[in-house]
Image (cartoon, rainbow, N blue to C red; front, top):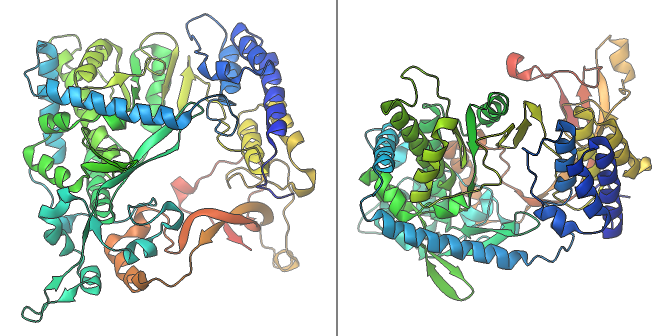
Length: 570
């Protein structure tokens, strides 16, 4: 049996029922018991729609194991629960578009609320401060491709070589700056273009004018997530702008490379009750054109507007977007982080002005996308500001009172972590290894034993923590070659499974551009870089990992002492 071979749905449901039964026994409270009864009755949809009340007075254990029962089904996309997920995703997209349309109309008029208007003024000043005095020229941006599809390169073929080999395409919005942008890509432009004999060094470059493509990807058991696939030149420019915005935000304490600040603030808020966590519904899809035009300097609105794709195709129709940018746009995450940082900074500044926050009182602020953390005194004002700007608070995931807080994948109840393990894919040994190791790291011996029981005994591999989930965390024996022992060398090898990435070695005419792209874009500094890798895997292989560690759980000191001596061999 392969490590990645999926079990049948019956085996997966039996596993879910067994884990649920054990969670109910461990939680031994009304919430976990109720959810377990629903699971045992096969009422999976009711489990997904069950809302946990963290102020009902139950115990930490009850909440913890109740969340684990829900996590068995919340992200399930392989068990049919009666949801029309594509229809739900489509409805969410068009509902967000309508909301953006109404927001654009509302923001064209003066704000009727004095305090909200003041916050927006503070937000404009803060955003302007973050962006700086001038818009960066193209030569100051690091252009690089993301891993996803473009309008003329499908996701199953998406890699650097195929994108460089595809016909150039951009949105109509980008046409005014297309020539200036292509000057930053001289080798690519000269390769695909034709030199004008009368003007040596000048090229006519064929570029298709394209609209985006609306598509959907898995999100949860209830719905799909709408994304818009961008033309290849737009995606390249957008990633460059997004990378620049990330660096600017980092200088002001908003580190979009690291979620730990938000996670720690959420933990503190669950203990002290002084911080509120805010989560928004479809935040990326409700950043309206009017909001960006109102909050950002005009020169930035101009640049971002020319880099966006304002039209998308869906089911033989063209949709003119009311939102400024969508999921799939290379700067959407950074732009929404910038806007929310400006708005929440404005809330704190206004509260200080009216005396609700002391002038020197510490007022922590956490922003990571639409995961927001502010002092509890500002929750009501923040809610009104966000609502006026066209956003909807997700009341099931926003917390101002009570002992629970969540942000950036960390869930805290009075300082205790309640983060469960989500079953996001079909059950296989690969998934069971990850669940087993999650339980091992959190001391869940009973659940760890259940996961182990369902793995294939004949292919089990064991090893230490800190090397991924290609093996089970537990007692292991290092294989030490005789040469190592004779030379008194420390360490040895243990085995682990590793997915074999798909690589596309077919010839592409853009291969000659890869060296220049690598040097120019600093692509390897942005993400793991292999120009042949495409999404997916063709199987699994067993690797030998060399280590000097002898314990199962040993802190990894690489961050303090630099990379260790471990390496992987076939």
